[in-house]
Length: 161
Image (cartoon, rainbow, N blue to C red; front, side, top):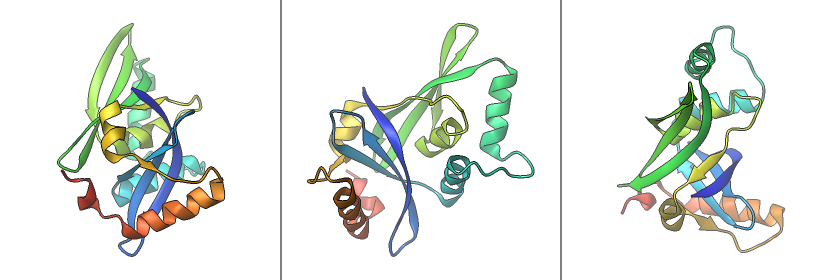
């Protein structure tokens, strides 16, 4: 398992397809871009920017249910990439028992960013080996530019085997 950190949500041009971008934590240099839906992108961005809706959104509701049950998300694991689709699991602790719940990575991340304490995100080694992207430069601004160039070229089907 490789620990990742959330870089943010970007939009692939010209299709306007949102991508959640994760980065391998030190000493790694790989990024993991995952195409996501617009609703999940909005849910992640709202939480990252501290925006609140007048009524709970779906991810807020799920967080509230977990808290009411005294359960907590221990971590998110992106488990596999199969036929161009990423799979993940929420690892939830409830009464001392660990439960693994199948999830889309985007929903897991949208839920995780709603917590004050960071929820660790991991990916299976095989996922990063298959879909990880390395940018040549150590300069952060240059990496951002390289990522923009990558977004201009990449398509969802590029992740299909």
